[in-house]
Amino acid sequence: VGCAAGETTALFLTDDGEVWSWLGAGMEADYGRPIARAILGLPRVQRLACGWHHTLALTDDRRVYAFGSGTFGQLGLGSSGHCPVPTRVPLPELCDGHVADVAAGFSSSYLLTAQGAVYAWGANDSCQLGFPPSIEGVMTARLVDALSQLQVAQLSAGMGH
Image (cartoon, rainbow, N blue to C red; front, side):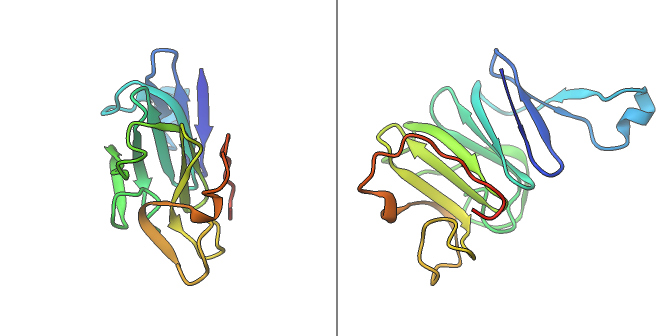
């Protein structure tokens, strides 16, 4: 029922809320065709978003999981580095369990709450998170104050924004 793609990732979402991916590059030569595999460790997922080398999964219970490269803090786990398994993103109490949408940019991540608030984390070198230039980036979800007077309805992210 859904799919998302990053620079080296293609993920597929089934109507049962399972996430599937292709095996690594070169594996198709061993089998004569691409081979899909399930991504384990996720509750039922309803939406996926992929950045350059990271993935966000929004679950049925309105929580966010992240995995992949976190070099710029884009996983929202409080540190930089790689996280190969889906890990629940710690969120502020006001949005935990109330997430309506997720988006992923090159090295940034975003969530939208059911109340229309936007939170962002990751790199902010081009102010893509909506924070002032004095903030180079953040490692955990942070409210985007510049949008706090708006009722945001949808998110989208791209290469540098």
